[in-house]
Image (spheres, rainbow, N blue to C red):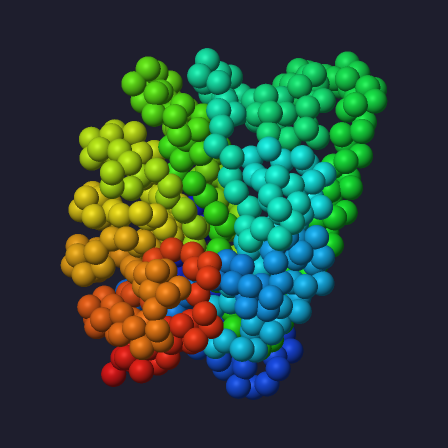
Length: 445
């Protein structure tokens, strides 16, 4: 009799997820060669994740909105006219060989939806930025007050709905006056009284309009992904994105200044809130991964880098709650895939605390030779082709850096060639050079 999921070891769960993830979908591929290439690319990535030697070093590009720029289309235009998305990414797919498909979902925001929300965390082309601006920008702010930790800790969902969301989006402002869901005990009738108000009803109608617009946007994104799959290029389906609990509070709620003060003024409350958010992060990530069939959960790490906080602060405030999340995901057979933004040179020994083949680290400005030496026997590592060289260097310079990285980090497998950070303005020939370098220097005997 097969074991129940709860009775499997983390390794057994991970292998079960890999087995499902590696299944070539039953779709109409463009050709038999495309179907074969799809399976080979998945296997290449899976072997790197598991610290095995694939046929060659895989390459992952973090393109962002580069395909739009190469096509001469501003992000602001594509945000409001989705027809450009399908056309541009279809051309991009034909022009570039790639091991995994970097689709438009993270590169092109749906402008109409952000307008309807009246989102206050970003400004974007046509909304706070010139219509032809090249990207959106985050607005740092204190969206949770210092005296509201207890509200967050006691009932996070209620805090989000009736306190946080009204601050960052005008569409949610009427929800300040609705009653907590936990006020419903038996008869729900009194709970719905606030919904008789015109402002609440208007907000609900706006949310319906947002849902309809979201369906249009998702249709285009899905079409792009399906086109890539038919051509033999898989998307690295994951358990979605998650954040370190410290970053959730420091980015999303308190802001950088706020959380730095809280480390000194109310450290106990900060720890309690991070522990609560860790549980929420775990549940959300596992749920999404189970729905998508994903094997990895991505973490952009914002505030844990060298120089942002001391080693003692990292080990006291940043690492414990993040480690809790990672261990819980590993226990469910998932692979945390962490993007260590900035430098993690002083963190390498500390972060090497996990079973072999259970974590992926992508490095930005970290010494890759040292990362390979410390982490290479236990973790898959990726990076660190400098974005500066990809942007301003020659194809020959790009290939030389890739060759050096492959020779140092590719030994024994477990390495993925990728840029150190997102690439915003690189010429196409430099991206071609990365792929050529993997084919020329990254083949395993």
